[in-house]
Image (tube, rainbow, N blue to C red; front, side, top):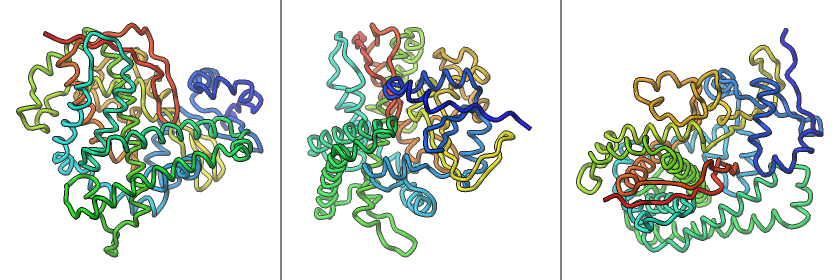
Length: 443
């Protein structure tokens, strides 16, 4: 019989509340180091959450026994109230039906038709780069990723102002949600003060904004062959289309998840390249062999293998989805421990991706880890896009966008940074606080 898991007391959580609100990752790491790869946290009222970075446990929950583990109310209720009930925030049959409807829009063959739109949006945003002046690249990458999603969804050139408003709303509401999640003992105050109602009103503004854009497309009777067209044409088994509300929810979730995680990864990747000039130079040499203006996009993407490795290694060090939550539908036994029905699990991708048992020099940036001959070694403990049936539906979309962006930047600029180490800002996804980079034009 195994020893019971260590339980971190509610008092310890409360004592560390300010640290946890700002950045919970050091608190997580301290407890993993002190208590092992799996421990429990008492969150009050008899409720406990299980934290794990154990690879076998994570694979079991996300893949082998995934039917017994649904997303918790952190996403299906708390997050859903702001961004709707869609792929990211739903469970069960509802999720399965809509996954089947949305997934064809992200098939590799469909994405080939969007690569030109993606590259045009990337080129337009990168034209704003001022050489020889240090700037924070995180807002730049945020704008770029948002415009790529907007153009790929809507193929429209006159919606920038509305998209910026939507971007502002998603940022504001995310900060509110983080306060709710990390300070559950203040939820009564968030309701009483009207904070939650104010942010729900912002969500309604976002929904109206998207509804207006969708209605404009419907009224125009134009076919753009973009993601919105594919979603408008998607049908349930009985032949019925998605309701307008459901369509808005799916589009809002695509915006929120699609632009944010990509912007984060691009920012971290540019910082890592700026701090490793020898790796940047090898990537540059690869980019001299491609010309996005003249050749087939898909064939060029396949040539940029080292660029892809740099992005994959960046996502190891800074996984955009740094923690994944699940709740058990029935009692279960994992690693010799018994867990009751409705047990909440928080699986740390950040800790798993830096676990010394799996990675040599785990905190070092080494893109060679992801050479095609090595990648098979990591399949049990590398989950940058999640794992199992709920792996991110837009993973290929995101990777194509990131390869294009990184290759285009490094081909034209040499990157440097005055920052020694990037400060983390873990919200719904893992963000950098600030990423100052200087772009030196290549001659």
